[in-house]
Image 1 (cartoon, rainbow, N blue to C red):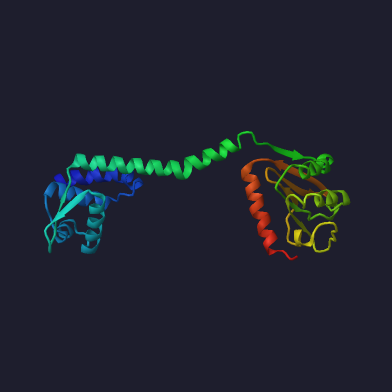
Image 2: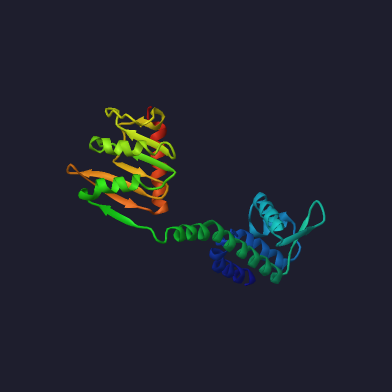
Length: 243
């Protein structure tokens, strides 16, 4: 009767316990020691019909957690700590898990939201695209990563403006292999024919330019996440492109 009662309890709490990294077998062995008193690993293995190797591994883990203690040598006898002490141990473990979740998930997401609380995402129509390109290139930025995969974007005024940035900022320009560009230092230019769309990335914004039915339009955003993703993609293309 007692064994059925314990098994029913374990079935109800094991799902919650698994969130904390506690297995049903660990709970079963602890409960057995709590009810039966001191036992050897072999006795536990025989009573619960669990392999000796697995029982010994679980006993070691429970001992490291402070749930059980052992006494004697060859064979060692194991006994459970009082159940109230166990509950205090589990509450400490729960607090550690919550703190870890806050550190690994809540804090980074909160930081991203706070840094992007005033972000914008704008669709740039064809008629405003050139003006937007010049506005971005006139931003005060430590870097200008530019992809001009469409030849019609490689105009003298765009290149002229970009050439003025190489003295105080990092400039990287990607163009198709068929396009010739002057006024930009060779180390700041690479060529690739495997680019999808065009765009400009600065320290604080990204403009993505696409072509649809021979018309160019864009999407502009200052969201840090989008800027970071675009930068990673640009660097991937840059590293695989030829000078």
